[in-house]
Structures are given as C-alpha cells and as structure tokens.
Image (cartoon, rainbow, N blue to C red; front, top):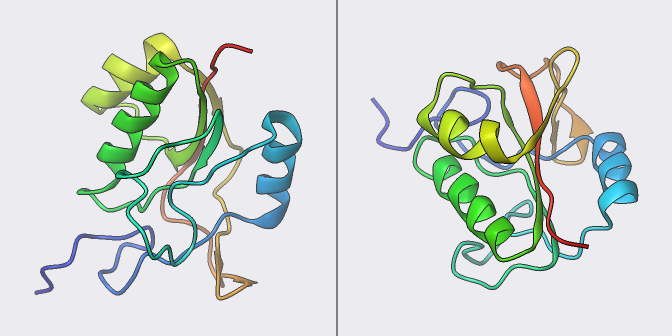
Length: 139
C-alpha cells in the first residue's frame, strides 16, 4: 500500500492534472487572475508565498493539501483578495459548512470535468463532481 496521499484520479502516482483550458479561460475572463498558488508541476510551495489580488486555485486533490489550500483561500478572502477554487463538490465536509457555504459563491458544474494531463484531455472524466468556489474580494 502506498504512503502517498490519494490524488484527483484516485491513485497515488501523481497529482499533475490541470484544468481544461476552456474552463480556465472562462474563469480568467471573469476574474482576471494575477496568481496561481498551485500551477502544474510547481517547483515551489504555494502555501508559503504571498498570493495576489485575484487567485486561481486548482489544488492537489489529496487529503493533506486540498484542505490547506481551501483554508488559505478563505484567509486571503478575509484580507480582501478574490480566490476562485476548482474543487470536488464535497458538501458534507466541515470546511464546506464552516468556510464555503456561508461565505462563498458556489457554482456546481454540470457533468464531471475532463481534466488534462501532459497537455491533453484525459481519457475519462474526473471521479468527483466539481464545483467552483468563489471567495469574492473587495473590488
């Protein structure tokens, strides 16, 4: 049994899976992102760096990292920054009920997202329903 946390695809190999370009483009057109704390194959710890005024967050879906990015997005929102997350639609979690539901705009995506790996769409769709969570900062 692997000691690595589970990833977006449900395995423990890697978490280098990216947002479909059309989904990212539509969100970027609306929010004009100036920072991504967890880009594909990041060589830095996005939790240890300052974030921008408008942040796009498609965090690793493992159980260790995803909650940290959700908490950080909430904390950044409290500072007045906008944070847009693409995460599994896990509505039974403590973070959903304490941070997301009372404070964020939630957009449930129709169907499952076909993520990208190595620049191409993956063969199957994601294993989870997804939602876009928007902590809208002050303009």
